[in-house]
Image 1: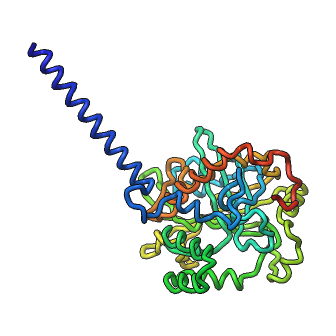
Image 2 (image 1 turned 180 degrees about the vertical axis):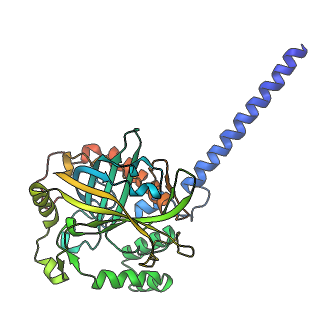
Image 3 (image 1 turned 135 degrees about the horizontal axis):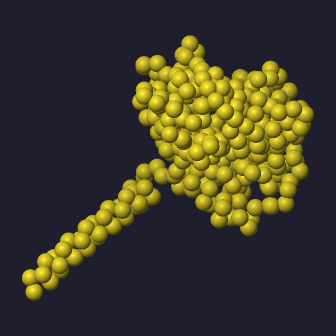
Length: 355
């Protein structure tokens, strides 16, 4: 009898622990989903805010919805080993699947109207791990926090209040610098001529545990042809895909990966603040695009370029954006894969305006 009582008491305690843990998990999911705090920013709200006026294009990414795939290699020169123990920076050649894209959620956007262009990468490493990254050709981000990014999307979509963007810019003064860049910076004539920047900061760890906070860029090895807004308009509505396809067909296209190390006092949590130009910068390798593939049947179509997929030796920093991006990318990925039947699997001619 005593044994049964002890057993029953033990069972009760085990059951109680399970109930408590389950309740904690439920609360965690509820908080993450925003159910317990309706005004809190959630990944779902971020993704919803990206939808164009006519609604999202089913089966496509919720942002950077226009793109083209490529395959190639990352040729590490070994210099990155001075900053990180990641296998990515050991001397070697690693296979890459990538995507050139436009920073828009509206698939009817013409190339000459998309001010932001992007480069996304998945690099496979010999140990089975991988590195994923998504960068843009802007020298600094438009806003300083994920909440500000959400507020920006709301202001852009506001058709009722005529001063919505002015009010937003007043509340977020860092946005004015981005606006000046978007209005005045020259355009390039090709994806191959753009410099793509991580903007977010990450942490690199050496074999001995020494850490560095870094940002990186992929700088073109060709001389950019700089164009005015008027000149870019003459290039046609969808010239970028045709251009990069022609270039890669004739010869592989290359970008140098440059890693910049923060000094004490540099803002590591705010991607709207550029670091001084004199910071230590290390050339760690070369990205080579060797084959272009239309996205409809290309290798990049079903990849989630989550920026928090990092090999040992690379990690996130105090910058809040990578985690926010990762969560939003997951929502976008789940939605578009659930809409598989709506995606036009038939191959769309490269350079054509896609619906």
